Image (cartoon, rainbow, N blue to C red; front, side, top):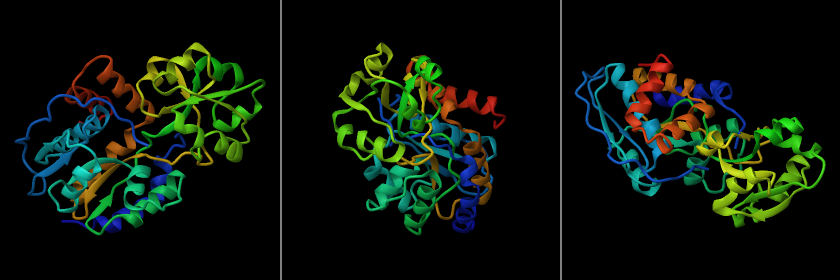
Length: 306
């Protein structure tokens, strides 16, 4: 069908354009249902099977992939809400599923738990090298679903903050909040000091992290970068240019013989998908209670991809 392996190596040159330096993969309750099989005419002779994990953000991206392919003339079958990697990776490796929205850093750790890359481009390159021969990745998106450090919009404006390193110039005590284990993680207080020269106190906040941030009890919060509350609570994710966090960009994971024309369609989706756009769609799902199919259809129309 294609020479997708060689296409992936060429994509390394364009990965930097698509990447952003924000900071694993979020989880939440899955949406109900899993879609239906399309009856659209195929563009290449075979049905493309699109899968998703069992949570709303991943299903939205999978639905975008599916609808984009259908608009391009491909026949698509949806296999959504499968579960975690141990459940769906074997289906990708044996060819039962052709396309799956994945996350670069987390997928790299799945295949190479000794990998040391953290920056966007380095993680992508290491992932391409770590994948088994029967799999490949297409262009990574700028959108991420990973650890990030956030401040309130007001705090960012008052202290002229855009990146993590800017915190070093803030007067007074800075308190970092997050899950208890964050205190010992390499990207926790010690990492902030080593990589960016930022001194913080730590407060274990767990499920109340965003609430504590909005209340002003902490100044910095460890929040997944696709969390809807970034939008609903007016938070500002701080850029991470020096790779404190493991970069984990949305990336299409495909079978190695994935058709070239289908890859072109999916790469157009990746080029248009942004961090802010992913957060906004997650808000539509969790707050507005819209279906992944409706969210995907509107996003494709807004981006001229339907």
